[in-house]
Length: 390
Ligand code: NDP
Picture 1 (cartoon, rainbow, N blue to C red):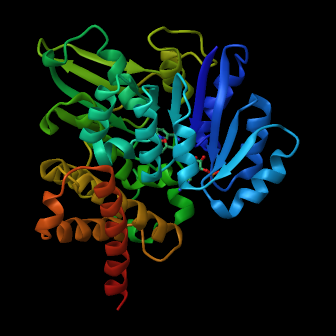
Picture 2: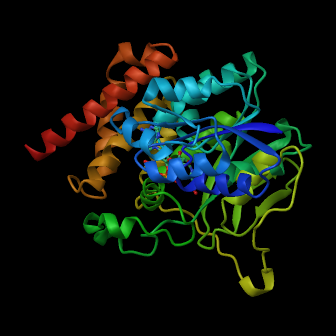
Picture 3: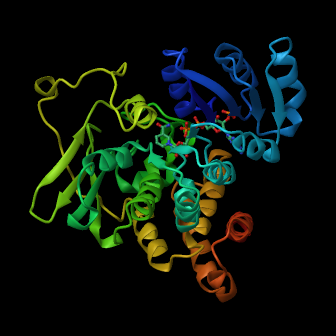
């Protein structure tokens, strides 16, 4: 039996992973499941899968979790240290599906154990790509991408030499406001931004799709994971979300990965890798689809794409600043304290402030420095918003 753990089990990716694992209960021995506020889901899945331990990120919810698990024999734990402890338990395969930079420390701990890390948490590579990849190498651990675009590129590269790649094209749906007049965007509400045209995902990534901060993170993730130059990475809007990514080779061939928008494909690929197995996914009916559209993104509508390129140029800790500032700006948008377009303005101002702070730029890319920078960038977002309000 393969020993597996799922970090962020109560979320959208986590639940899809639980679904796949629960379909083959004799093949998987579940060690740890983690969640946040959704204690009842966490406890239910821990009981059903016979997990060794369930961890909530919030210490204040420990008693609730203990109550929900009472009589089950599943251990209950809470807090950041408990998440890292759970990641240190020996397993073969881990799903990293916590949202945000909170996924970084458990991910690094997983790699230290030499386990295979199925990485949905793109923030891990955005904040600390070189550090994480070095860690994987040092401990002989495999990282498998779960983001649909990166899984698609990974699959298109099987048997290929990365040096023969000319470009990588990742697709974007364009999000909830793709067809809105630009002048209406300042009034876009949280509810409107939380509706994705094609994918059923967590609220935060759905809003990030509307602003294209999600695609901005994915451009950086592409650079880090596949180690190619930023100018070889292209983004194209593809409203149908059927082609997930394309890899262009030096001989002009362009290999595309197509499939219905269902994350269980990328999760299942990472779970079964290097093999392929049947998955409970609808087959694509090309004739019924009829046509696929591809449109160049307008950077005036999606300024986050330009910010991603600036971040890649700066390197070092600027990915951690970018991600943390984006996460905090998103919190403030969800709390209705700033408008939709203000998210980009605020993130941009925090990146500028960081660029001006020489000592920070030169700091080494260690986990401690990433976490401190993350904290600082969030604080700077709050200061920038207060200044704007004043
Ligand atoms: P969700 O918001 O649906 O789920 C997030 C998970 O993380 C939940 O289990 C949540 O717990 C837990 N969580 C929230 N805050 C914390 C914290 N501070 N510490 C520890 N755990 C926490 O997110 P998604 O499943 O949509 O996304 C997860 C990751 O996968 C993200 O990095 C996202 O970018 C990436 N991804 C998602 C895709 C998708 O289709 N959803 C596609 C590709 C990548 P609880 O809900 O109990 O509070």
